[in-house]
Image (cartoon, rainbow, N blue to C red; front, top):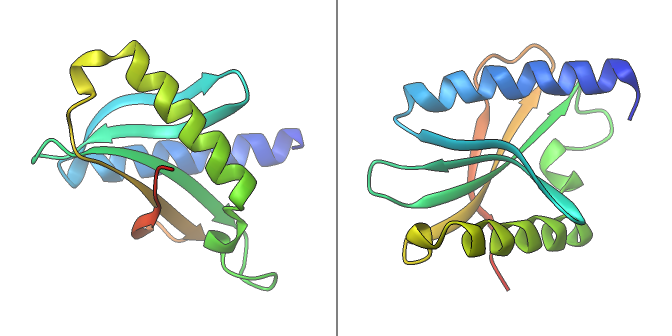
Length: 121
């Protein structure tokens, strides 16, 4: 990923993080990395559901919807990191959990929130 893409991605993740807080999501971690993957945002809802968010941004939708870019390989890397996160945060292991996507196109200021975009295997 080029410098401009990384900068734009970081800007969009900050925008989404602020938006999630307004949705009463407690942010537990941003850009959580483990060997082999990364989770953009980890949050907890008011009903204590642990949510692993993948943030996707596309300048436009000419090449398809951003949600289509969450490949099976990407899902495996995210679930691998989620398992690692839970091992290191045992107090969260009994929470309900899900994997959601937050999609932004162009200058959109509020993301499309796709819940349960995939499941833990």
